Image 1 (tube, rainbow, N blue to C red):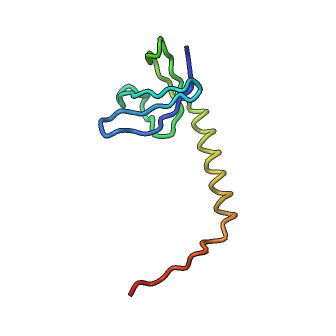
Image 2: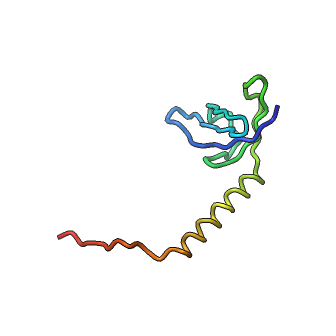
Image 3: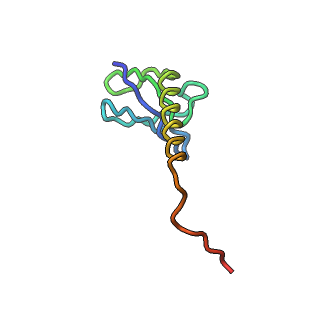
Length: 92
């Protein structure tokens, strides 16, 4: 079975925490088993056999699409920002 997943974060032990939301599972995958250049926030296609990851592919199209959507939302938020309502106070 193939499923879409995202690299959520990396642990201190060089493990990637990979979330497969569509099936409600989290996988810990050795960083060396990831496709070359994979980083936090990238989307993957995992092939599973009884909840065991047997292959991993980088989904570059989905990654690009999601990163573009996030950048677009950030740009809209920045454009709509009126600044902070708090004033900076100088510390003497």
